[in-house]
Length: 114
Image (cartoon, rainbow, N blue to C red; front, side, top):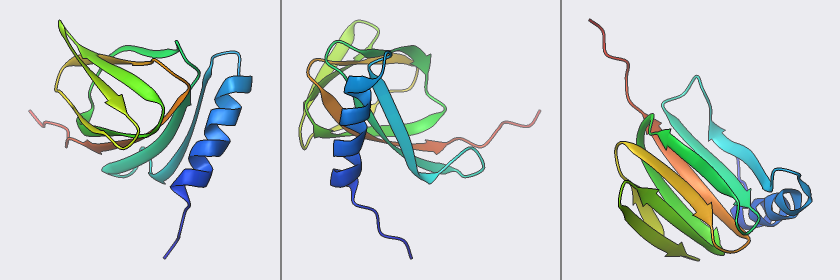
């Protein structure tokens, strides 16, 4: 059993993101490349984004603090502190409208064997 304070980690990552040249910081709290489930606290300086990318599986974004915008094609959804956004399949991007921290949860799809 391991206990992690997501709030403390979010504060730490926001501080790191504000100091980073990229305006981003992240720490994987559970899982990784060898696991199906992966949870990562990510922080963004206002105006910073994750450019358009493909989903590796089912994913959600829980907004820990701030305000972000999830974009997929011509649709977009704003998420504020406490909101859970379901990431649609396909290409999408995420932009921080304010200094923000999120908990990104991804359950990778099993590879298709041909």
